Length: 149
Image (tube, rainbow, N blue to C red):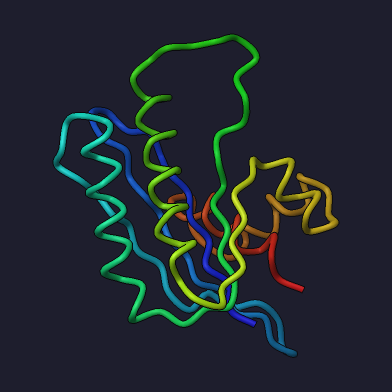
């Protein structure tokens, strides 16, 4: 089974989207593809649209049965900073694009929700993700691993 994992990294000025495709086989889990999407837009809405278009353009070259977006968890204190808005806008736009792919199961949850979905402890899933990819793609790998059987 192949799964696509997506995470949005708030960055100075504009968010980056990290994408990982993993496959589960009898020999174990392997990483098939990794890439990062970046935008030059400055307004959160325009950034989200641009990132969604970039992902949409890459999807035809990918093969996967399910996709997961690792969303930001709820902040314990209400915040109105720019990075939070950028990330939320981007996650929503990417979720929309993934829902347009036919015959693909799509999930969008925070770290704890993904761990619960996988039936694993959060720490175990984090360790497994860190072992698959470098630090840049760890969050996207986390999302992808949550949907593997």
